Image (cartoon, rainbow, N blue to C red; front, side, top):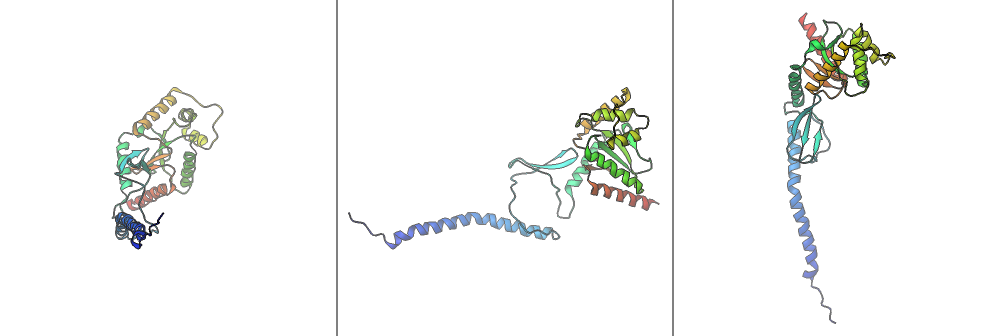
Length: 257
């Protein structure tokens, strides 16, 4: 049997095809690379104060939609099924997420009858609306924070609405506070973890707890603590934002003197 010798051109054919394949792949990849580099350049030019090391495509695909959930603005990309908890800024540094949250807060404020709230703190102090749960550890930490600020001369007037659908004993403890002759003292005792063995009950307290629950449902509060301070929603015990509110109200008070 004769074996035919392959010519140089035949031997080179697979190599040529491989090179062509690589070139084709590079041609496909080049548009993405170019687009990525262009986007990186635009980011550097638009947000000149932003320092970053890495840059590349994100896993998010398709349009992104905005929603309000529990006082927070969230973003959803249905095509890639991503949920984003983020803050969006425009090229001028304006926090668009904060603007959306404030708009949502103003809508919710319209549905809150603050005369139905449990008021704690001096009437002349800056006012915050507070949605709280007696068994929420972050709510208790916030109560300690308010007490510390009061000793610094930065007291606030808290308009309290109880969220009673998260922990099983929250409604009973909230009713106890409403039924107590000294509601502020009962609140402090419950939030310090020294609840009495027998909790007070009364028709008025039960009705107040039920009214609070209706308010919570109507405005969509799903987490505690939630504050509305100067028209802004603060979801959770976010100390920096609360400190900022206190500083702004103090500066405003000084300016009005």
